[in-house]
Amino acid sequence: MPESKSVRVGVNGYGVIGKRVAAAVTLQPDMALAGVSDVATDWRARVVIRNGFRLFGATAEHATAMRTAGLALAGTLDDLLNQVDVVVDCTPKRVAAKNVDVYRRRGIKFIVQGGEKHEATGHSFVAESNFATALDRDATRVVSCNTTSIVRTLAALKRAGLLRRARGTLLRRATDPWESHESGIMNTLVPEPEIPSHQGPDAQSVDPDLDVVTMAVKVPETLAHLHYWSVQMTREAGKEEVLDAFRTSSRIALINTGDGLVALNTVKELMADRGRPHENLYEVALWADMLRVQDDELFYAYMVDNQAIVIPETIDAIRALTGIVKNPIESIAKTNEALGIGRELI
Ligand SMILES: NC(=O)c1ccc[n+]([C@@H]2O[C@H](COP(=O)([O-])OP(=O)(O)OC[C@H]3O[C@@H](n4cnc5c(N)ncnc54)[C@H](O)[C@@H]3O)[C@@H](O)[C@H]2O)c1
Image 1 (cartoon, helix red, strand yellow):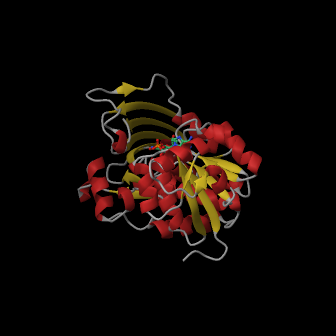
Image 2 (spheres, rainbow, N blue to C red):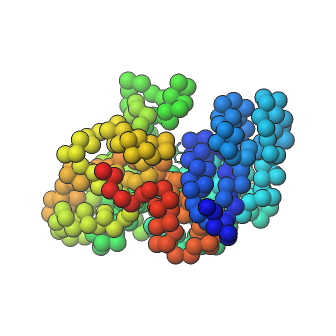
Image 3 (cartoon, rainbow, N blue to C red):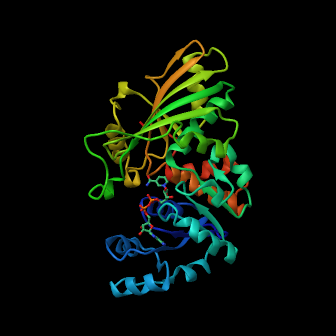
């Protein structure tokens, strides 16, 4: 049941991220989904209505095309914006940057996703690191899936006073599963042309103090990303001390190859068996039994479900911007409870 002081949320762009954000909003006791705006005229728009959400066309022209395709619309994005306290823009990379002017002109708080640049909002968000600096702002950017995982894990080591510098290699999924008939690489690996890859500098947009360098390569699969990290600690530390540092984050789940969770597909299957919507793995799944400490050096690997990891962050960003919950710990706990995060994965 929504609480009486529900924040009204609009979602612009009902794709990979937007559909998950919309579903997550409906699970929050202090939020109500006002509607969803898109440009699609095919099954993707039909499923919005089937899910019981109000559908809006991004522009009058799109609304006409959508109505012609037989879709029952509640209006245009313009109408939706009259009915929301905050809009989460989940349109494709660089489209949101153009919408920003509209939101600002209308005085509506907004969130963009990681495909946009930091400058689009002047604030980049990861809940456990900087919820407080987003409080009551007009806008923030929830950083990308990879960047979210980097900040979550390095922030945990930093809180424990263990982090000196971190160097990571990212194996990035080629494309999202639903559009793998259209693009994606096969039978090759494609290195990002520059070192450092963009994720390290992007993590510094959330926490400028992080000494982090990333390298990345695109790999021919669609399940998730896999990260390998080598960390120079501030001092010698034992494996249990490091694991305890990671345990301070409710959004890092320790998993073990010894439990049969030996690959990305097995973790995805576990999420399906757990009944998570879209098999969402919201947590960073970090292999505890693989983690090694050698004097003051630390080595570990983890999995990032690129389609899901930013969803809880987006929910917390809504609370921060609107100020309905001012305490990060309270917001994170509320989001976790609604999405079933924070208990053991198995
Ligand atoms: N896919 C991922 O794994 C992932 C992970 C983290 C962050 N992100 C970021 O999230 C954002 C959205 O990415 P996505 O993967 O969900 O994209 P997507 O292509 O899956 O979905 C975009 C949706 O927006 C709609 N759309 C296109 N133009 C529009 C317009 N002008 N107005 C309204 N709707 C429009 C499309 O029809 C589609 O439904 C991007 O910034 C991306 O970088 C994506």
